[in-house]
Length: 86
Image 1: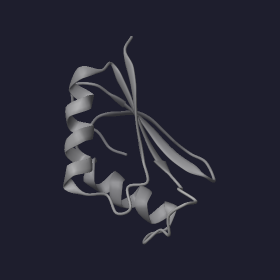
Image 2: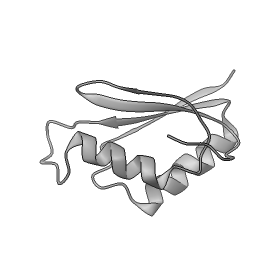
Image 3: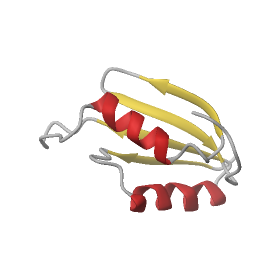
Image 4: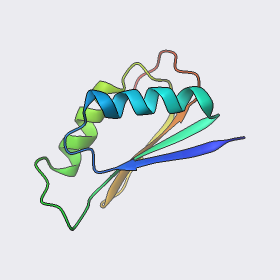
């Protein structure tokens, strides 16, 4: 099983971020998208806001699991796109 990690601060999530995740999901069996807090940057949006914005932008990508932590949020996406919910 090929697994990839797509980490980023996603502050804010853009169409470019969504495009990268969509493309990566086609090439890997599992894709972990990690929304991280970068202490060297002043964030425009809170971690929860970024998580929600990214979830909205990636709602059409199949999800196998979603987890959150105090310093990061991550989702494991099944490759190949498709429909699903966050």
